[in-house]
Length: 475
Image (cartoon, rainbow, N blue to C red; front, side):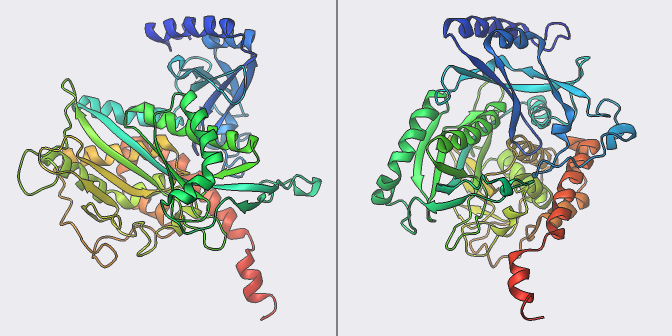
């Protein structure tokens, strides 16, 4: 990393400390991981001695990992001229380099004598890979810093926990993807926030609590959610890149820990089970004033719940909500959640402390915790793109003094602009609002759009159970 100047002095110092820690703790392996376009961790596991060298030299991986849809199928013709992206750097499934970020190094307590480090991506000559979603968030944070702000966020994430009955590992079960595992509930619904139901789930939740705390994640609460076998984790607020890094580690660790105990943890938004409730990812956000660290959203007086900065930021979220939905809800399944009277939004609306709107505003003059809770997201979203889309939209609101409009107390009856009802509509909304091409880059948006369109096409080619039941005997 020194050869191309990809580490600053502080990272170099931390890299040396990690090498010493690997030896002192007698680690066996270190996992080098990066978050792909879907926010899924991918990478390689190196023996300890090789890992020490790789801290400075990086780890090579095939670039096709950046070109796949959620079934792991490569969407772009990588062996054609320009690799389908007009880039000779990616042609022929050429390598890119995982560049470890030493500040993310941690031990995986559930794996035993295993280290883990999150990586950025660079070409072999040191240039950053423009398809890296972590860099997209960095770009948004840099824009905020140029305007004198830091980005403060808090995570509130719902998921389902199921007991594995059959992992479907017979030879005939291989596929791309294979069949979903057979599972049973860990608890019946609906006993929202009851202590009795929490205690039923405590044997699993306590395992997760211990492991997540050892990972250094700032866990705040664990709650029994509304649906059967549904839970929620919340985390203390964090700054900038750290929140997104924590989210990818949290999701990956929870799935791995649970699997080791015969449990399937799923961040899929709405499982196709009777009585299942959709899961959301509510993103709490505000801006901190550079230097003082004061909450820039706190109002000093007047009728509005937020400062003029906060209200304009809110205006940006409302203005770009339809296009931003593709980053907050990037799966076909995520749009099964946007239903009236469901505690999930179906319009680009806002209000004070109302759980039916998209942007729930919490605050009043003099309240240092004043912030916006955007309820649009699904827990499967790529954290870097979700956070970046929110920050870019909010900063645009500030730059253009955007008016969020009047609040609504009846969110499912308001005349606010409807949110997309499908992934296809969300892609179309992104095309209609060119804002994210200007902020994230036209090449990145074209790349991301192509992956999502490939997922849609694959879905539309499949014959569903609904079609089989509806037409096979009737027609």
